[in-house]
Image (cartoon, rainbow, N blue to C red; front, side, top):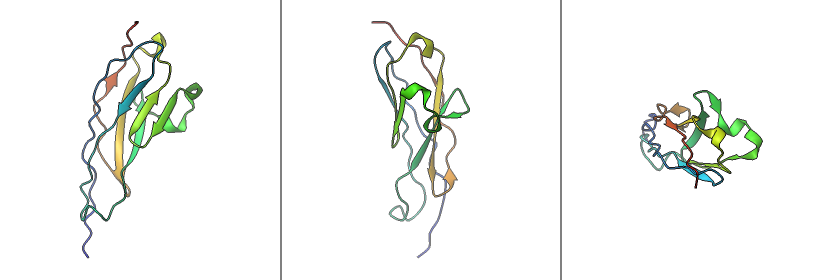
Length: 109
């Protein structure tokens, strides 16, 4: 069997409204390009805060949780304004390009 390894597609990261005091869920979407597609397991995802910090390696007072390709930010605050998030997908050592950056601008309700 011939196995062709290639990096995943550049992820998309839809921008969502965030609200002070509420949780926000961001989803990093990518696709495998290795063939055959059944050969590779699910993609792994890495999240970045302000361009360099890997979210899953930091506690950030327990407000950030990664579940597969989703990042959940609990209790968004006004101080989160301007925070920039992006992500990458990886497939057996092959990394995608980094997603576009989204910037938080929490709204008060």
